[in-house]
Amino acid sequence: MSIRIGILGYGNLGRGVECAIKQNPDMELAAVFTRRAPEKVSILTKSAEVCSVNDIEQWKDRIDVLILCGGSATDLPEQTPKYAELFNVIDSFDTHARIPEHFDDVDAAAKKSGHIGIISVGWDPGMFSLNRMYANAILPEGKDYTFWGKGVSQGHSDAIRRVEGVKDGKQYTIPVESALEAVRNGENPDLTTRQKHTRECFVVLEEGADAAKVEETIKTMPNYFADYDTTVHFISEEELQKNHSGIPHGGFVIRSGKTGWDLEHNHVIEYSLKLDSNPEFTSCVIVAYARAAYRMSQEGQKGCKTVFDVAPAYLSALDGAELRKHLL
Image (cartoon, rainbow, N blue to C red):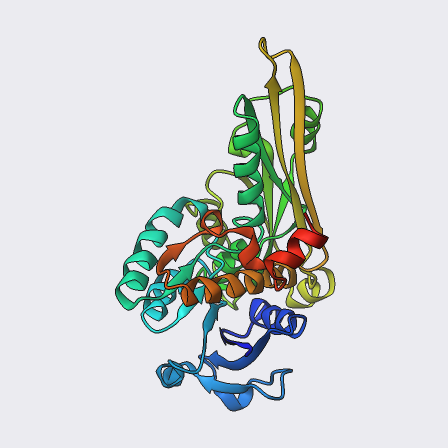
């Protein structure tokens, strides 16, 4: 029997999830839930329904995992605990500083209802988190470095678009090349947040909006921009569509460490991603963890989990024997 998936929110991430489900024969898209008028939302999967989010409770027994595709700024802190009361849920909450409180909120709701909630799934947090953890466990004597970009951050772009006076916007995260080079050279530099990355924003203003106020709001936004050197460019809607319509991203997780009785040997672990489409890759990670959530739920597990809590075998459509034969 196929794992029945529901999608809440049909933007870039929601569409990516729909495409990822198509590549996983053990899953099927049952329904897409939207805050828009359902008749105005056109999806690609002919067998799935488009429903108002107001009708989501009617699907309580018809969906195995609900994938939440809203933004981290305001949607997911409210939605994930709320819907963990009805479904097994997955989200891509990516405000690193607020993950502990988000975990606690989802954990309370999921344990009360007997469901599984896996939060902060994607590539960072997500795949990068796993690689940081593995590298720390393997090289306890060492230093971690994470560099993102150059690429479009969906979470930061979403945060920009929610600023009063902003009609549309994109945000690029850019590694500081001199810092990246120093880490790869094994120099083990002490780098502040500001020394590792810059942030560049391209913003389309609403008519009559105060540009200075918008720029100040963006640059001082806690958890998103306040700790970085941030540049804000105001451009036309046409220019945004022409030059900034793609959603590429990527980055590097690097740990340099030492081994030996006198720490005489140096090692560097590097994991990198280069992504044509940030939301489509994020969606693929999410769908793999949806499989894990379903399996864990079938075993009677409940409560909130992160990528650290999910055994790798739960992610794969292959069984244990096939994994040992082909991938070990």
